[in-house]
Length: 66
Image (cartoon, rainbow, N blue to C red; front, side, top):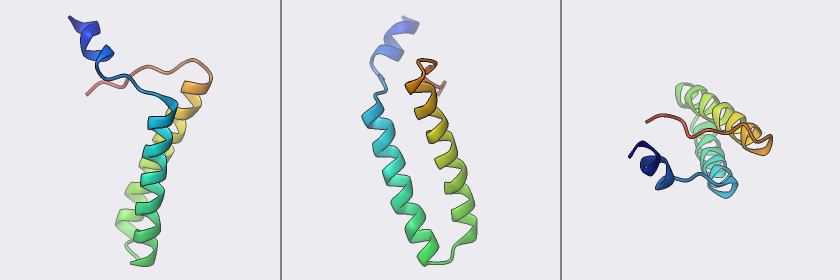
């Protein structure tokens, strides 16, 4: 049963890159609005997605717990 939950939520490199692109667009808007708090939050999210992409490319990726 536990594995079924992960199988239904497979992560691909494309999905990680799409998430990264979405965060980049949100960061651009936060920069334009000079929203420092949002910029910091987005920076942390972008770092995490970049780390996930790195782990994915090196074969060490595991689906994060929800």
